[in-house]
Length: 181
Ligand code: IMP
Ligand code: MG
Image 1 (cartoon, rainbow, N blue to C red):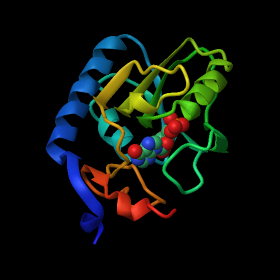
Image 2 (tube, rainbow, N blue to C red):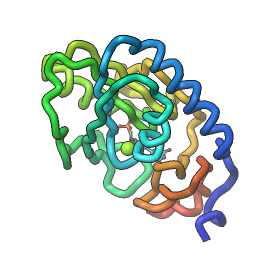
Image 3 (cartoon, helix red, strand yellow):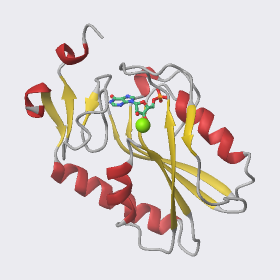
């Protein structure tokens, strides 16, 4: 059972729903009169993206980008690979990047640079979780759902070795699950 691998729940379904609604309301206010393109970084942000965009009450586009920075372990390799690029041109657009978790900052410092180079009108970053303890790159999010301590967390889109993404809440993974890997 997946639940047996979870040490404890960090954010319940109810807490996630409440916070995501607040974030959506804030983004709706901040982008009033604009038509942003909201970019989900796959795969970790897919559930957050689906819930967040339904709380954004202004016209917007959605697009998706898939990157990988991890082998199969619990820390970033520093190497970012683009597995799937955007479907549309973002030149001149107001861009909001949606990520699951900002950890070392490797993935996002690379990605934000790459997207800025496409001559966007503006670019902001929205992350569900922020783990500042492990930051090695100078990246700050404009919207943060929750700041988390240095635990490896899974669920609500976040994985360990591609499992646990479908847990409806966010939990701390038991270290025994990844120790020895
Ligand atoms: P960074 O490049 O080190 O900032 O890592 C960002 C990516 O690492 C995120 O998009 C996640 O996919 C993954 N990641 C970092 N910390 C965790 C965690 O605690 N649980 C699951 N994935 C994580
Ligand atoms: Mg990710």
